[in-house]
Amino acid sequence: MMFRLLGSLEVYGPDGAPLRITQHKQRALLSLLLLTPGNWVSTDLIHSTLWVGNSPRNAFGSMKTYVSQLRRKLADANDPENRIESRAGGYRVFADRRELDVCLFEEAARRGRDALHDGDPGRAVEHLNAALELWRGDPFEELPVEVRQAETSKLEEQRWAVREDLLDAHVALGQHHVVIPTLRALTIEYPTREHLWCRLLVALCHSGRRAEALAAYQTAYRFLVNELGIEPGAELRQLHQQMLAGDEVTEPFRRDLRQIR
Image 1 (cartoon, rainbow, N blue to C red):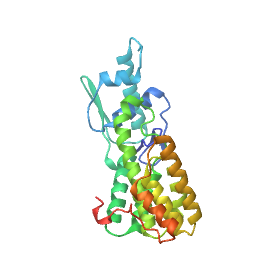
Image 2: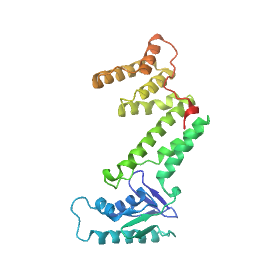
Image 3: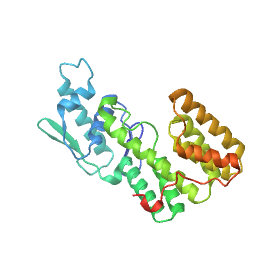
Image 4: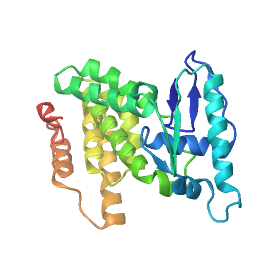
């Protein structure tokens, strides 16, 4: 089967056909079990996740019904496995890493980083793009923020690292023009991350757009000074001086690819 959790929950049977799970509490229950596949999830945690605030008097009976309905749906999808196991006080779900888009994302990210480390940026681009294409929205969307926060924070950090690795891979291929739109969007979304501004300035200069690079520096400077009350860091100032002097713009932010692990 395939369980897609990097966005709203989607489930596909062994034949690739989508499995319709429309009832909200069933979707939340399956998402919660898939948050830690193979591990026991207490009925108390399930209860607090499915019913925030007042819960019905027969909440635990309803919980058993939702589990039975999910088992039936998975069986109807010709899934030969007994996916959901129960014991006193808890439930757990079984899923192979190859059946979870979360694990597929982590594996593609690892392959991309390894390729970058091995000096093959072309292959790195393929794996890193594949990793990012798995994202469709907020991970574990059906769950309350306080329940999914730890896992989603970890995944968001991994996604951010993949974005940076992808930028490095394109730059290693000399494809500065490719990264400019992404860098413009990222500097708007994360204006305090100076290394993004550095990458943008270098990409613009290497694409023959020095005037735009100077304008981008002024945007970064105004934000840092007016919003944060700080001067740009040494790397950003160094790039600015190189541009003003008409020198070849170097890339002080570039990591030694041999150190990427």
